[in-house]
Length: 172
Image (tube, rainbow, N blue to C red; front, side):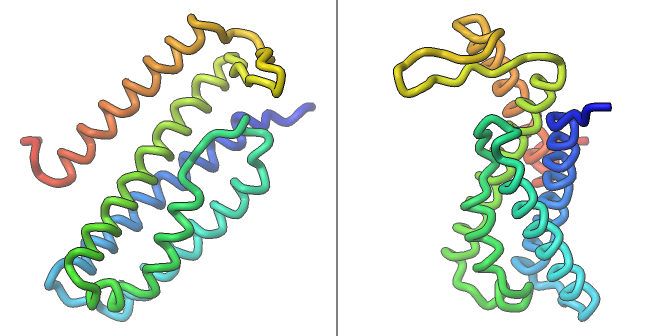
């Protein structure tokens, strides 16, 4: 039986997105005045390790994903800057805001990658321009691009609502 690389990659990207949301909780703890326990510090380092492993696996599978941008470079950069929760707490406020902006950029890209992979799992084959400008794949063209745009817009709106809810900007 043939493996379905789209479904495998979808599961991995969804798992990474969930872990990325957990990583945010630790960033917010580091940004707060609350005590950072040894257990919290250990959990912070563990989630960093899991996310880094997933990014490495996604990088190995990049060909199967049709060149989707899931924010891997920004994610690696952010993970390298966050040595520990305590070290993040010691950063100047401007650096903390920058870390949060980077976190959010990766969140949007991961969410968009999940949406695209879900779309592909339903049978859509993305259009890829070759060197000569010719397109490969089926289901593309203007109609396919419109569909991708709609999926990206829906994912962006859902992501914005979730972020607003998490930040307490929406009554739940």
